[in-house]
Figure (cartoon, one colour):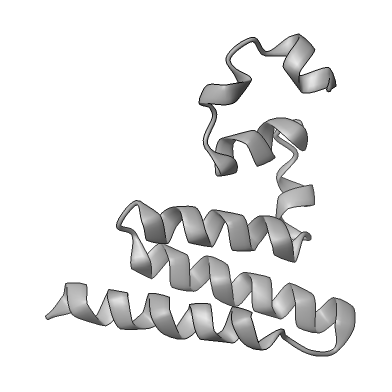
Length: 91
């Protein structure tokens, strides 16, 4: 709620931008949050940057593995999807 009070354009923000606003631009929070990295990766993939998406998905996988000992299957499948898209761009 505090964000809606401080930013009247909250509804215009994209998910990645909103996440950065919520975390007050603190990069150390983003790089240690696998869900945040996943949001960044999905945003990159949706905007046509699959190579960057692969990197962010892999960072997310590393963080969740570090924190829980395993990586959710849906996350590894997203890495595969992003890698396939990146391969298409290099052809």
